[in-house]
Image (cartoon, rainbow, N blue to C red; front, top):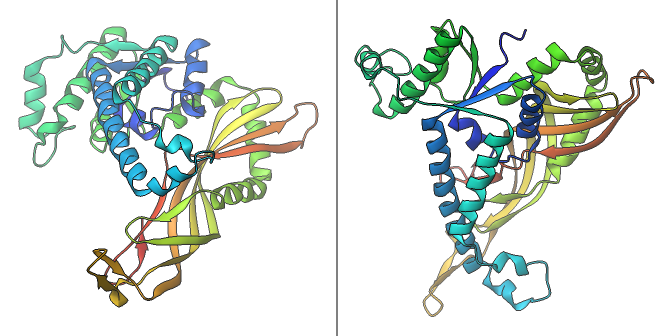
Length: 353
């Protein structure tokens, strides 16, 4: 049930979506805002937090790129290979500026309202701090002050305008505040808000949802195929992931992001249990080369291990309102912000995420 068309997007959602403003979730929100089906909000604090996180994440990305260029320098000897772009120098200044510009353009194109915190009562925030009320709790974490000011700004806006608002956040403290609020309603995913709006406004939603359920096995098969084609690697050992085989997939959630007469975009969250065939150096058998100053392993470990991942897939489908039952999967995209790496512990050599 759609309780309000107002939606507040927390910093944690921008990070979770990897600032992918051209991705399916943010583009769906843009469409709803443009059509007058939704009204987006952030606060001054969120605005500044997102920019700060972009700056930090670009710096980390530059460091990771530099490490990759150093470790993969042998590939520089292949000037006509597809690896040439790996060694392009990243300019952190222009890269950061471009991502911040994308953020600002997204806010502008969605007509996102940036709420001021200037009218938030400092006394009311400190009262919550000392009384351990949400978003503060046991320990009265001082890093929750930004959330407290943002939440109070939302409460003030709702009271002034006699409105309610969805608060979309994966932050564990914001939901506790919303539980005791008459104005704020918590959602874990931005896709949940979009799904609720689609089901309220779009008469095709129930029939398309039925079509998705009837073809659930085909959707799962397409997700498995795409998942097995993702890149996997061992993070803390010199080795390889030779192959992946999905043993079980369980749907956790299915959310409609967009529907028209002939197509639909759906986010499917799944729990995937898979086996990985991995090979890595057995350092217990290594000897030290004093001239090269490196360890030389004389044996490799080869084993099959099992792991569980939560996989977020965007499924693009074709249907036809004039041909009941017609269903075709156009393509599947696995969350671009997700990486699948193994770490091998020294104790039991068991990979974990």
